[in-house]
Image (cartoon, rainbow, N blue to C red; front, side):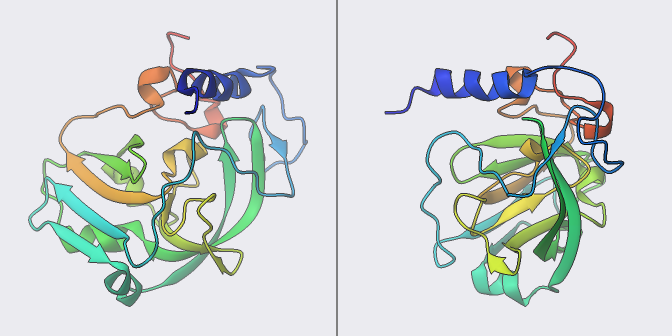
Length: 213
């Protein structure tokens, strides 16, 4: 059985490591405090859930006119796009030009027709993880519900079969193993947010931790 307390403390320690201003890589596309990598690191707590395309389903619910449930085939019938973006992890690494394939999050949300009072979203993962975002952030044209990266289906370690990709936020907002998007009127901090991570997670502002840390 994993020692969850130690795993969580370990990830927080990685995020806090150094806490030095500046940009070690010197690259204009790499935010302060980040180091440019050429590999694609894997970092999560515990083992990936055992989800396959055949068992995967995405639910859009909450403050919507019509609840939506997409299985794998319905998801693939939606307009497929490719988008290349940079990826910034709170544990201080950045990878540039990551080529994702999937569906715009806005395309999926449009199916459910969010109500006027829907202002925030909770992203639910198959392992029980949650994170939060303003609905408006999910509607950005670079936010993708991705099934592939580097021309290959997402591995379980990288969030497969489907993950969210939110390039303008630290990667903990890009929920792996995406299971549901729940819309609501009020903000609801998720797994890391209630443990001291910043609610907004803007890499360019180094929003790693809340003001209480």
